[in-house]
Figure 1 (cartoon, helix red, strand yellow):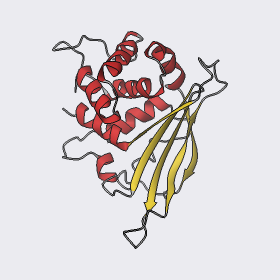
Figure 2 (figure 1 turned 90 degrees about the horizontal axis):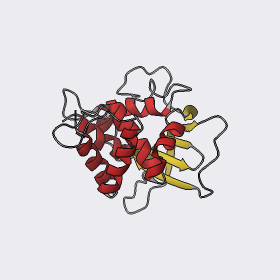
Figure 3 (figure 1 turned 90 degrees about the vertical axis):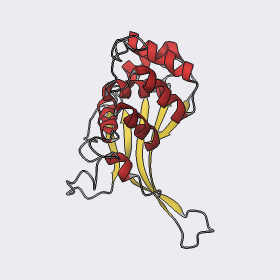
Length: 212
């Protein structure tokens, strides 16, 4: 398992963020009890998929580092509500539909992210299940974080390319999708509405670090 420093570096690099800012967010998350305790350097605690899930929530859903504890409290327990799921419900092979067992109705965001990161971690093989699933460049996973009212959307889309390679993609079809939503929202910290989007690439980058 990787140290918090390596996890911070990987997330900052793949999301194009300042590493110092991500490190500060990680510190606040650790102080709030959401990341395994331990110092930076040789004595740093080994990161788990749950730690990584909490850090992804903190990084992508927090407007300010000082808001991390409240952000994690508001977002970790968001519950999944399926909107669209076109994959055959009878499929049981995780490689055919690796998301079916993860996105159970009412599943909490932190647990779903943890399970997705496990899928993105290569174990006894060069590529993880998630990486193999997205080898086809027509497929894309999008996770979109909204604030200040806690909400997160998830979708897997397939881009339909035209026969003529010179033309732009015709359309993007949602294969699977839905939202993580809460009950009555707490009073937001601000009136400004922001959206942040990441893809399967972030999860795969995190999984590779955890496999080290």
